[in-house]
Length: 206
Image (tube, rainbow, N blue to C red):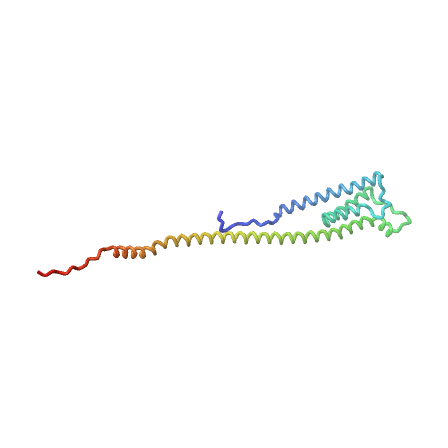
């Protein structure tokens, strides 16, 4: 693989991984809802504790808890499950002296409060979750940009190093060629200096 064109794998979420994570979250919310609602219903049905005297039914707290953990969907499913458990044996009979409005209020006050609480808490939780996801996405983009910049810097450093080595090699090759005429001239001057000088002798005429 060439180092001049690096391929940086960004730290992005795979859609398949995101889908699997969401499915696991829904399954976990469903399991926790069944466990908590079933436990409270078992306590009420066994007579260990009567929730009819409580000002607020415990199912409201369970709905708020799961809404805060899993958002709107988890809270609404919990409220629906709680309603199904409460009216598992059917709706209570309306007395003859009770108006329909009063019967509706007594019958559906708690389930509607559970759904309302699930929506309110779940919307806040879902909005916060989206904000955290956006911030995480921005952070991943920043990390990816930093990785790309670091990779390009490394490539530029390698190219600069190769260029410096190439220039140094060319300088080493050009130095003897440029110095050879000077060396020849120096040798010629040295030979001329050591050459014996022939002095002319006066001629003797006979």
